Length: 230
Image 1 (cartoon, helix red, strand yellow):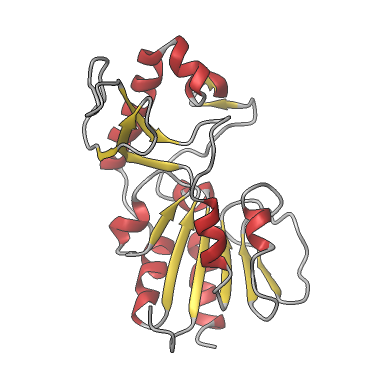
Image 2 (cartoon, helix red, strand yellow):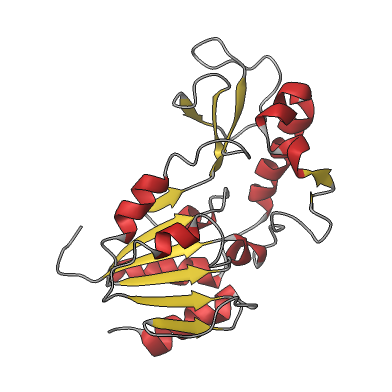
């Protein structure tokens, strides 16, 4: 990292990927693509019906081939030419990487990776469907490399360390009041600026906090054109 460049950390959520056609985590009924959350996003659900869970994530992985990064993804990637940029994302898609971002930390895992169902550290690339009987190198069933409910967000400490070095912390398309963004906000340096881009912001502007009430593509463009460079 070039210490002479400003360090911008983007924390992104479902709102940025929604504009590319990827559905948000859950709808108003608490369902995820018509499935109960615990059926497809918990260790217990995988143990009870592994085929259902594999089919669910296989479909979501295939969807990645049908969607493209949007303007917000591209603008964030282009900022690397002038700034040190780190993306911390809750999203499990690869749209940031496909837009050109080179420093991306996925808090909740990645659709294009799989791992052993018994060893969370045994991770491999995955661009095809995962089937029952597909085994990791330790002989256990492969599962999606996704952090499910009840599982540890192992990258959170790394995310906190990254945030502690930021000059500008930009939240895009996710709530500021839920974990893990709430804990990351505590790690933002006192003299750093925070920008919150969301269509329905759940906080008011304050000291060192600028709220842009727009969807991701418009809000990130406004940030780039009106708030940068410093």
